[in-house]
Amino acid sequence: MKLSDNKATISFSNGTPNFEVPVYAGTIGPDVLDIRKLYGATGMFTYDPGFLSTAACQSAITYIDGDKGELLYRGYPIEQLATRGGDFLDTCYLLLRSELPTDTQRKDFHKLVTMHTMVNEQMQFFLRGFRRDAHPMAILTGLVGAMSAFYHDSTDINNAEHREIAAIRLIAKMPTLVAMAYKYSIGQPFVYPKNNLSYAGNFLHMMFATPCEEYKVNPVMERAMDRIFTLHADHEQNASTSTVRLCGSSGTNPFAAIAAGVACLWGPAHGGANEACLQMLEDIHAKGGLSYVKEFMEKVKDKNSGVKLMGFGHRVYKNFDPRAKLMQETCREVFAALGVENDPILQLAQALEKIALEDDYFVSRKLYPNVDYYSGIVQRAIGIPVSLFTGIFALARSVGWIAQLNEMIGDPEYKIGRPRQLFTGSQRRDVP
Image (cartoon, one colour):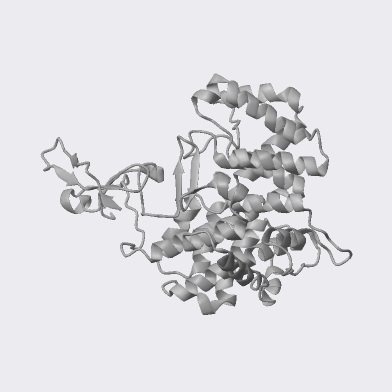
C-alpha cells in the first residue's frame, strides 16, 4: 500500500473544520480513503451497510475486477490456473506461499497433504452423535470446530508454525470429513483415504466406494471435481472470508475461525446459492419444464411475485463470472463422458441463460450467470446430493480462509474487528 498522488478533503456544512484524508493506492484496483482518524478528528463515523464501499483490510491474495469479469489468484488469472496451472493442491500452495510450486516443492507439498488425510478415529464417534437426517453443513460446522479439540497441539493462532500445521490439516482432512458426513447420512460405512489417489480422486473414492467391490475413479469426473475445488478456493473479502478474519482477529484458534466461515457459507445468499439454484431448476422442471420457462422468467420480472432467479448476478461481478464459463465447459465434458445428450435440467439451465442474456430486463441489470449456476448441475451429474453442495464449497474454500487468516495475523496493522453503528433507538431515559 502506497500513498497516492490523489488528495481528498472532507468538508462539512455545519462549521466543522475540513478534514484531509490520506489516499492510498494498491497495485491494481480503486484507490482507498484512509478514514482511521476521522472519528478522533470529527467525532463522526462513516455509514456503509453491507460494506459496499469499505476496504476492511489490505490483501495480496485475490483480486476481482467485476466490470471486466476478472479473477486473479496471486496475480494469475483463474482461467489459466483451472486449465493449465496444475491441480487444486498447486493452487493451495500458491494461495498459501504466494508462488506456484517448483517440481520439488510440488512433490513435497502433495506428499505432506496426502500423509495427513486420515482423521482421528475418535471423530467418527463424535459424528455418530448427530441425527442421520441432519444437514451436512450442520455436521461439518461441528466437525471443523471439534478439530480444535482433537488437534489441540496446533491451536495457537499467533504461532506461525501452528497456523502452518492447521492449514495442512484442514486442507488434507476436509475431504475426509465431508465424505464421512455423506456416508453417515446414507448409512454406509466410512471409507478411509487412499494415498495413491489424487486429491480429487481420493475424495470421489471416499464418497462413492463401498467395501463390497472395487471402485475406479472416472478421470473426467476427477478433473471436474478438481476444477470445482480450484474455482472455489478463494474469492477476496466475501461474507465467509470476512467472518473468518473477524473471528480470527479475537485471537481464537484457526479451527474455530474456519468453523465460523463454514457456518457463514451455509447461507443461501452465499455458499448455499448453488443448492438453491438447482432447487429452482428442479421446481421449473416439475411445473412443466421448457414449456414453463417463459412464464417463470416473467414472474421473475414481477417484483410482487416473490419469484427469484437464482444463479444469476453477483455482488461484485457486473460482467460474466469467469468461473461460470469454466464450469459451463466442465458441464459439457461431464455429460459427454456420461453419454447424456438431453439432460432436462441442463436444457432448462441453457434456456434460462439464453433469455437472461437477450432480454433487456436482465441485460440492463447485468444479470449474468455466476459460478453457482453450473456447478450444481455438474455435481448432480457426478452423483453428489444437493444437500452436500455447500459442504464441497467449504472444502474448497478452506485453503482461502486459512491463507486470509495467515495474512491478517501477519499484518502489523491488524486489530480486533469492531464495527461501529448508527444508533436509532431511544435516548437516555430513567426507569419510573
